[in-house]
Length: 390
Image (tube, rainbow, N blue to C red; front, side):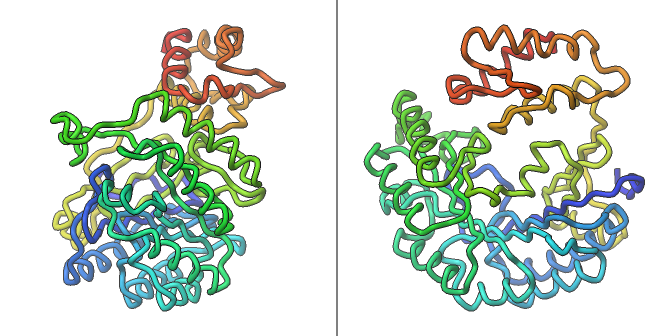
C-alpha cells in the first residue's frame, strides 16, 4: 500500500520511530542505524512529511510515543521541528500521555528541560542494570553512575512520571545483583518499572556468541527465580504487576502500551514503524533512503500490509489479552463475520481445561493466567490455541 487508503478510521494513538543509536546493543533486534547528523536531518524532514500525510487517520490523540533506537540523540532543533509538525497537523487530548524513550548518556538537564517545554510528560529510561559488568556484557554505552545521574536530573526537573527498564537473565548476572538492581530502581521512586528477560534473537550479535559458546546464558531455573522475585518484590513496594513485563504505581500504567494489548488502532510513523488501522497491520520500509524518497513523492513508505483474517483477530485477542494480568474479557471476544464459532463458544471451556491444571483462572467475566501460567505464558497460549483448533 503506497498511497493512503485507510481513511475511514480515526486512531488516537501515535508511535514515532527514531532509529538512531550511538551503537547497537548486542541483544537488540529493533531497527536502528548509527547516528549521523546529516542523515538525522534528512530523516526528520521525511518524518514530518509522513506525519502530515497521516493526519487524516488521526482523531484526538491520547498518546504519543517516541521509540527507537535512541530518541534522545535528537537535537533540540529536531525535537522542536517534530513537535511543531505534530501541533500543526494533529489534535491533542488535554490528558495526553507523551512519552520519549531515553538512554543514560544521551540525556542531561538541558535536554530534559527542552522535552518538558515541548509537552513531554513521561520518560522511559533504558537502564537495564545497575551493575557495570552486566552493562558491559549487554554493550550499553552508560555506567551505573551515569544512569543514577540521569534519573536524578529527571527528578530535579520535576518530572515524576518516568519508567525504568531493567533486564534479567543477563550472562554473569546473579540473584544478588538482580536484587540490587531492583532495590536501586525502587529507591529512585519511578512511577513505572519494566523487567524484561534477555531473550537471544537470531538476527542479533548476541546469538552467534551463544552458539559459539563465547557467552553462556543463565539456566532456566535461575531466570525463573529472578522473575518470580521481581513480581513479589515490586508488588510489595507499591508496583502491582499489570502486564507480563510491566509494573506500575496505581494510575501510572503505560496508556500507549495498553492500547497495543487491547488491540486498539494506532498510527506508526518512521522507518520500520508498524501501524494498525481497521484490522490492517502495515509496516514501513527500514531503508532510510527509500523511506525519504517515497515521502518526497507523496507516498506512504509502506512495504507490507495485511488484512487480518477472523482467525488472526481471535488469536491476537487471546495472546495480547492474556499478557495483561487482569486477563481478557470473555464478553469482548471479537464478533467478526467468519470468526470460528466453535472457537468462540469453547474459549471458556478451553480455559476451564487449563484452569484445572492451575495455569489459567476464570473469575467473573475474565480469563487470566495464574502465577504458574504467567511464567510460561508462551507455552500456555500455544496449548490454548491447540485446544481451540486455531
